[in-house]
Amino acid sequence: MNWSSLRLRLRLSYFLIACMGCWYTQQPVQSLPVSRSRLIEVNGRRENAQQLTVAQIKNEARAIAVKVLSGYGAGSGILIKKQGQTYTILTNNHVLAIGESHRIQTPDGKIYQGELLKNRSFDGNDLALLQFRSTREYSVARLASSSIAVGDEVFATGFPGQEGSEKRGFEFLLGTVSFLSPKALVGGYQIGYSNPVEKGMSGGPLLNSRAEVVGINGMHAYPLWGDPYVFKDGSKPNLPKDLMIESSWAIPIETFVQLGNKSAGDTPRRSPYSLPHPVISYPQPQGEYRDSAPENGRLW
Image (cartoon, rainbow, N blue to C red; front, side):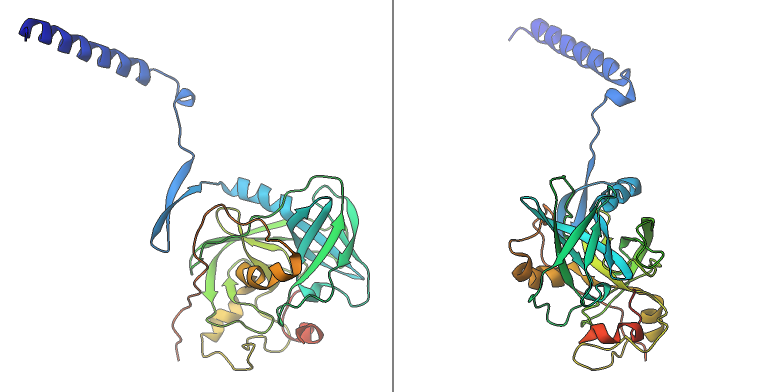
């Protein structure tokens, strides 16, 4: 091999690399490639996840949350499914007034007559489904399929305010998961969180940091009546009572996924991540529901 030729080729290669490096470093920041995804570890597996800002999560929450106007009362709901021109809303059963008509106010302010899906069994869980028809396009929630843990950031949304008012404003509350019950409380409540939900936010979505629905709001902290902290089997939890009282409570979306698909027909839109079902964990111990709703601290 001609060593002079080889040295010339090497020098030319170094020169080209140096020129490219100078060009790259002089480009404006906005023209350089930027990765908008990150790796997260879930249940010991590393998954790609879209990195969302709080503002983006709020926008997605606003797009999937609706007002539920029932009789003289009101609550919130979640757009979970679209089939043709028919939309399905998930809410709490205690939001709905017995024998009254139900109206749905969508994010664009339009009001539709809602139809309760009757003869649907949720096994004593405080859930209900409504449907309405519209030619308009509305966003549909993504339901989380990844697990949550104590300390995870969550976002509670809904419409607190005057009973039955169409003018109630959208609320978006930040907080963290504070408690995960090993068994479901009466009504199916298992997720405790620090977000200070208010009356009227029942049925609204509880979101994770990827704007996926992890739960359905339904019970506020510091209940005014009775003791709602009883397991569905009637037993009393031997768990930190002060932590339970200080937390707002939601029904895990997985409860609806397991039971609600029988009622809603085909499967609602799930997260694109193929992850295991949630594993409920909780701190170590230290030492029909509708008629009783005002006595158990749920929101109306």
